[in-house]
Length: 74
Image 1 (cartoon, helix red, strand yellow):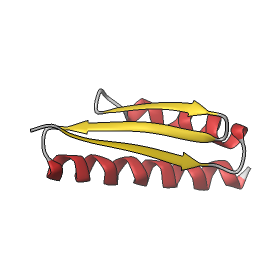
Image 2 (cartoon, one colour):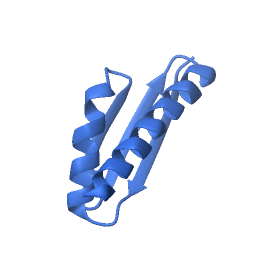
Image 3 (cartoon, rainbow, N blue to C red):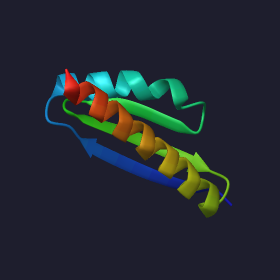
């Protein structure tokens, strides 16, 4: 079975989206494909099971959260 999730994260502006994306793409490692369109980050997450997809999605969102906190401090 293959599980896929498409996610859009809206940022306050394109510079914030660019900086967050630059911080999180290091961890994509073939499970996540992330791109930026304007002020949003588009991600496609693929896994072999729903449980694995949830785990990957949780990790991805945790990385986004940390990157967002760091970017917004500057």
